[in-house]
Amino acid sequence: MGKNKRNYFRYIIIGLVTGMVNGLFGSGGGTIVVPAMVLLLDTEEHKAHASAIAIILPLAIVSAVFYISNGFVNWGITIKVIIGGMVGGFIGAKLLNKCPTNLLRKIFAMFMIIAALRMIF
Image: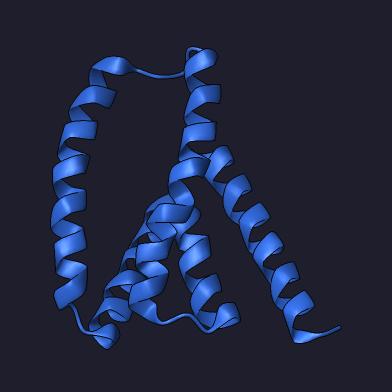
């Protein structure tokens, strides 16, 4: 299999897994797509994190339409968290430009470990 076909196959698999995780759990696509882009597609760490947001946005829209249409959304909580999330997203995007790659990787790894431990216990 040629390199272009192999990469195309990787893109499809990464997209499918990311979409399923995002749809099933309501989030979490970034925990799949960032490491996949870095390890399987040789994407630079900062670009992987930034690209993950652009990748997850359409996935989140599809999932949100499904959840909203089935009455699963608590709008009282959702609106408040959206406001905080938008402010936090702006701050995080600004910090990404200032954060060295090795520190970014360590922070992301710690976040994933803490999230995993909280889910287990």
